[in-house]
Image (cartoon, rainbow, N blue to C red):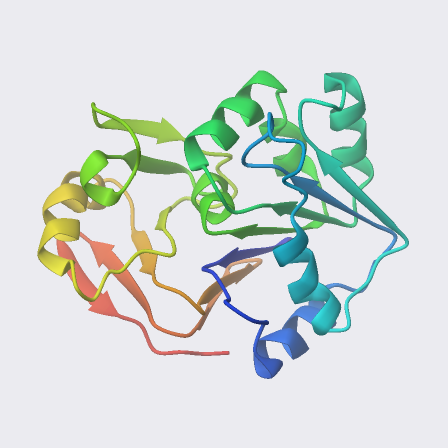
Length: 218
């Protein structure tokens, strides 16, 4: 049963009740592969995201970071062998370009590893996402971007939704008629385990131009 975590951003650590669920799901701890969202910045090592797992008591025998310092074939091999794949937060556009260039999406989809993404990483795990200046992306022209496509929905993660509801609805309305869009701010998580979707924190779903807050189930 495949397990995917779409995370917002945690300023300090993953809360204890969510950490407990992660501990139960991540039973194989041989290796974690972290995929950079700033692959040309070699100092970007995912220290924050790694610290969340460390504090939660989840450690691995091997830690690997994939960026442009890693050869394409080696990156693909690391993903295939990973116990956990973690798409790091940062720049979703650059991360998406890197995923496409290194042809990693297919390997991630085929993997039985627990796949996690924080903020930008969560966005890129989804089926499609709207890259729009109005939603805070550094682009001039809006476009729909294909993500890894682990699940058939879109994600807007780590966004100040509560203070921008009208803007978000106007931007995402067209896509919401094609697929559900899960929108969250900080300290949130969406867990997909098999066919079950669980919610942690304040998460909203936009469907057919209607926004609705979801009940927490974790």
